Amino acid sequence: MMRPSSAPAPLPLLALAGFVTLGLLGGCSLYPLSPVTQELQVDTVALAPRLTYGVSSTPFCLHLRYRNDFKVVYSQHEVEAWATDGTCATKGARRHIETLALSWRYDGYTQQDKLCGSADTCTMADQRLIEGRLIQCVSARARDGDQSAFLSSDQANCR
Picture 1 (cartoon, helix red, strand yellow):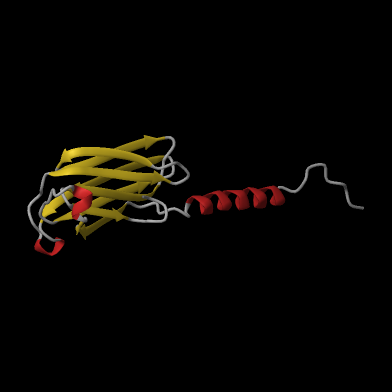
Picture 2 (picture 1 turned 180 degrees about the horizontal axis):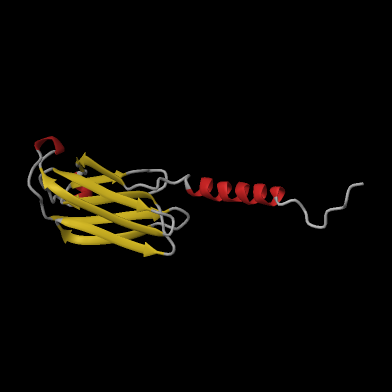
């Protein structure tokens, strides 16, 4: 004769806990958990004289570099834009320009902007503990006289 068991078998509970744990770990691993660094650059274009009222300038290269370090409960981000003389191929010296601006978007948040007027560099640094954020995209805009440039890591999400 078999006796009825008063305690349920622990195996189904352990299996359920294992599936939940794997699901949570799998969801977190959708994002890159190692630092991502990227550098982009673009040459300027000349605007029409009627848009700049005859103000002119020499061409420059706009650079954009960002570092995105995301560890779920900790994140550290650095974004920097700067301009150099001449085209990107000439690798000129850093240059002071009229207007330089940064934009960035954290995954699930609205876009944030920073304007650095009359500068040779524009930077943003952010560190978060408990609520780590992942930068989805970054962009930079620059203008000096009749020369203008725009650069984005993802034009659909960052303008």
